[in-house]
Each structure stands twice: as structure tokens, then as C-alpha cells.
Image (spheres, one colour):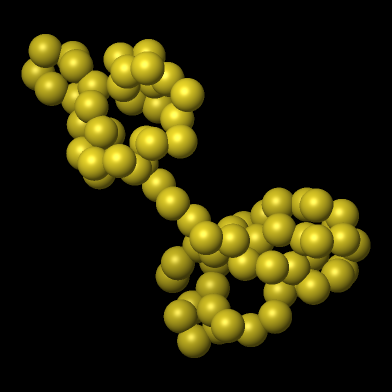
Length: 78
């Protein structure tokens, strides 16, 4: 079952829900204030580590929003 990310426009809370594909379009209420939440577009980064220990992105520009200047400084791959 996929995990969807949501944000509440009323209280700005961010949360996740595991939902089936058939439930994906149904309304979700914020767990903090019970207001209707909005589904976010989720992205992910996939990293690879070579035998020599070098970390690199295997998703092309998936890390384009990362402020690091190289994958060597990324704490995700560490």
C-alpha cells in the first residue's frame, strides 16, 4: 500500500497516511485540527554507494533541491 503525504492548510501540520490506490482520491482529515488536508506531491532520492565508498545519486536530478555540493556530504548515504 502506498504512503501519501499531506499538509493541513488550517494548521500547517504535515503527516502521512498509508492508503490503497482506490482510497487515494478520498478526503483526509488533519489529525491535529480535523480540517480537510491537501495531498502533497512526494519525491524521493535514490543513492548508490560504490565499493570504494563513493555515494552518488542514481536518479539523475532527483537531488536537485539538495543544498549539498556533492553526494559525499549527504548524510542519507552515510
